[in-house]
Image 1 (cartoon, rainbow, N blue to C red):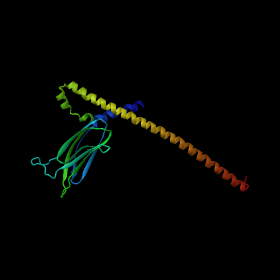
Image 2 (cartoon, rainbow, N blue to C red):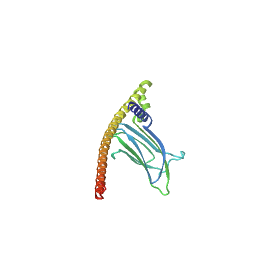
Image 3 (spheres, rainbow, N blue to C red):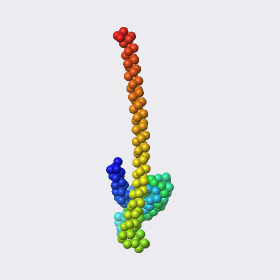
Image 4 (cartoon, rainbow, N blue to C red):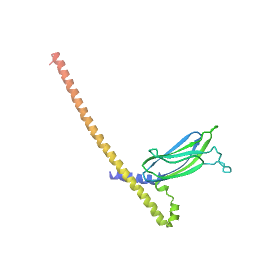
Length: 213
């Protein structure tokens, strides 16, 4: 059990350090929608930047190259909404734990066009701009690293509580499953005994009628 817990803790630490940021580039056809979801813990900071990639930097993007962006929580609360833009950004603190979704919708055009969207989404520790923190606070490298470490430890602490809750839920599920299996085994045994008794009674009655016994 201790080994399992250590492995889970290690997995949580790796997850916090490696999966709290999401930078990607994707294609979006006009008239279509693409949504990206991220599991965010309550009270975690989240920032995102998006822009339409201009393949011809010598000329500005045409008016047709625009997107509408909406950011919503797992309960449907809107944190960001903007229409017909070529770039933008958002920032919020999660009010609840769950899947937060960013949806991009490209304006419909005829003929169809395909947009390339560059999207950078960061949550938790990675959502903080540590360069600005260092500049504004006039802190040295050691203090900056301590701030980073403190936020990382805080995130791990929150993950540990969540992990403990999930472990308790799993144990409760195991107890409930074992109880049901024991009840089912007892019922199956009772049915088998009953069927065997009825078979013996039937055979005895049959043999008595045939005067075999």
